[in-house]
Each structure stands twice: as structure tokens, then as C-alpha cells.
Length: 322
Image (cartoon, rainbow, N blue to C red; front, side):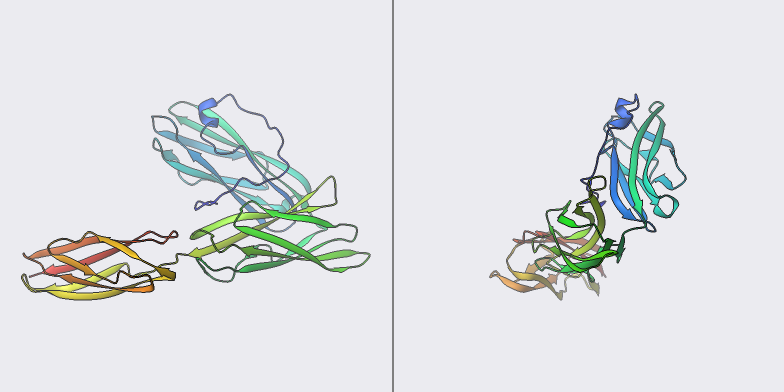
């Protein structure tokens, strides 16, 4: 997944020319993206992760492509040592039919001039249709729960879907044939999300293997946003209080299942926190602030839980002491 969530698709990967730029090539997490067989119409998107593994700043001088059906841009041109960016590739399937492979040339002028190459490719077909174009789950999914997304795939009448799989183990796709006549075959594809899917917004691909030897796989992109199992207000405001006096505020930490708050970090002689010790699906936390001197007050507290999905929750506190 790519939160920058990108997974290298399992497709028909073939050798491509490799430039004589070992340090530049080594910054790319992958050489290419095979979108497989796709209906003509949608714009295909892929992000090539670029990480600076050198000890010097790297600068991307330019990005060019070998075909006008694809555009590519660097999300950030200067990359400090150890940092990452991405090359965004957009492939317009309206502008080609059949097999198309496009080379993306990424040139660097710091720390020295080099040029690296990656590719995107797809097979655009007017004989298939996918509706909707992506497997999209309804709204945000809570961590610890499951959900499904569906799409209808129409193929030529002599085609069959033999199997389905996904690039992510957290997605379990299935399919069933709903109609077939001499002209077309219609399938319903369902993607089920596992309960242990991590929180975050991410993207992956579902692949349908067909009985066509020359073009064996059809790709359906999938996107989902999974909410954290726990929640809390990000900011607690005490307002104005006098030095030596105390103020109290309460907030809740919620989970999809019972959990423990093991400790609250950031408290001291001025900020006190109290909550239940037993497992609960919702914990009420009481904060008491008793300042000793005047001035602005800003403090970050860390609520530590035993939840696997989100062990730490940050809470910011603000106040002014008179």
C-alpha cells in the first residue's frame, strides 16, 4: 500500500532498456507499471517512488515521456539525503488502442547529470467495460470492521474469468457470472476488506485472469479509507486561568473494541490526568491543570493504549495563565 500507497502490480513484466545511471536507477523502487488490460476511457495513475540514497542533495532537472498519451511530473524536484518523492504518471487510455508502452525519462543535474528510465504500459480495449471504473468502498471504514465493493465487468461472449486475486492481502476478491449470450458475458466482481486492514487511505489493484492467452489479465483499481479504531479530540483548551488556581477538562478515547489506557505521557506537577484502568470501548479522561506561574501554556500529551491499530493518540493542550 501507498500512503503514498503504491503496490507494484503483478502483471506481464518484460525487460526494458536500462540506462547507464546506476545511482539514479537505484533511487527508484520499481522499473515499471503494467496496468494490464483496461477499458478505453479512464486515465490511469501511478506513482513511482524515488528515494535519495546518496549523501548529497539530488535535483530532478526534468521529466519527459515517449508518447503524448502519457504525462509525468515530479511531485518535488529537490530531494535531501534520505528523503523521498514520487514521479506521477497519468496514462490517457482514450488516446490509444491495443498494446501501448511508454517510457518515462527522468533527468538529474545534481549531484551530477544522469538520466533514469521507467515505463508504464497497458492494453486498451473497446471490447470490455467496467462499471464503476474503480472498486470504491462506501465512505470511511472503521478499523476492525469489514466492507465490500462491487463492479460489473462486461466481456466478449467467448471470454471467461478463471480466477481473481489482489495485490494486497487485505483484499479478498471473488466473481460470479451473471449473464452470457452470443455477444457478451457479464460478471459481478466483489472485493471484501479484511477486518485487520490497517488504518489509512490507500490504493491497490484487483486482477481478473481470463481464458485469453494473449491478454490474460484485466485490472480493476481499488481505493479505500480506513479510519483509526480510536478517536479523541486533537486539542483541549483551558482558556484563561489564574496562577495557583486549577481548571478541569474531560475528553473521551473510543475504540471499536474494549481496550486499556496503559499510561498518559506528558503530565507533570502542573498537568494531571486520570482515567479508568479496566478494558472499555470508551475511556473518559479527566485533565486537571494547576499552573504555578503566568504565561502561555502549550503541552502535548500522549495517550498510550494496548490497541494494535493505534497505540498512541496525541492530544494538544492550550491555555493562558494570568
